[in-house]
Length: 143
Image (cartoon, rainbow, N blue to C red; front, top):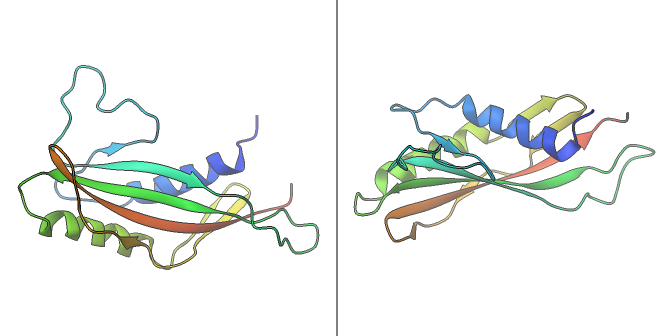
């Protein structure tokens, strides 16, 4: 079965994120994936993903499929009370890693459509979250 275009886009974006090396390594909580795995404690520092595809852009060229647009959000999760410099640095690395990138996956070209950005820290019960928004436009190839 051929992969759905949105599934292909998500896989390509996550694969690109996984190419970014952090020291020490930061686990990634996938979208709709149990995290942490059963029997393991939640790490104090990790990345959490949200994938937000939007409606296709209604201006294809000729018979080409409609371009897709959306957002990959990568939230940097850090322990509450440990400051914001380190998680802001991690957010900056994610921004730099995706800025001006064009990715290719089976049947689709994915362009980061504008510079990714981070919003101010969101203070939660036990952690601080810094969401990084990565906007994309994907151009499916005709089948």
